[in-house]
Length: 144
Image (cartoon, rainbow, N blue to C red; front, top):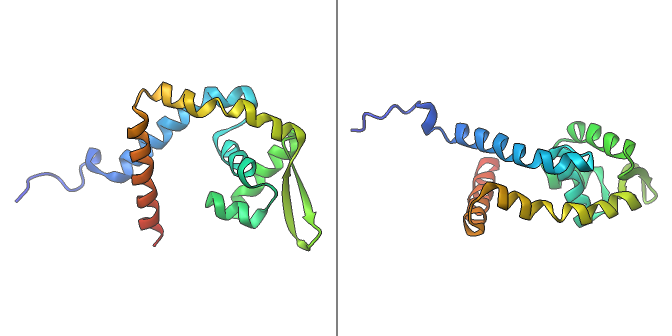
């Protein structure tokens, strides 16, 4: 029988994930600030650089955010000139999100972020790839 406390803080997966998430987002902050982006806005831009144009619904699915959380992010990104929200001509009930010229051109600056994050974390790329794979499995297990 183990005498380890099952409620020990340092043994909790939720605690490790929470601290790791905050710490990694903090690594991104100084890289994103010159572009005028917060980390959640950066995630929106990543999805748009890969898939634009997108409906709000599809963007919400990709980011695993509800539309109510996504809406203020989109409004702010539109206000700074990185995207446009327009009624989808095929379905007037749906908003289509498209990148502006400025939003598209921001991608070249953003391409420097992933290698800078890897460098700042100081972990081998293989370790980060393994971590990503493990976290993807955790996400899939948690939503099932």
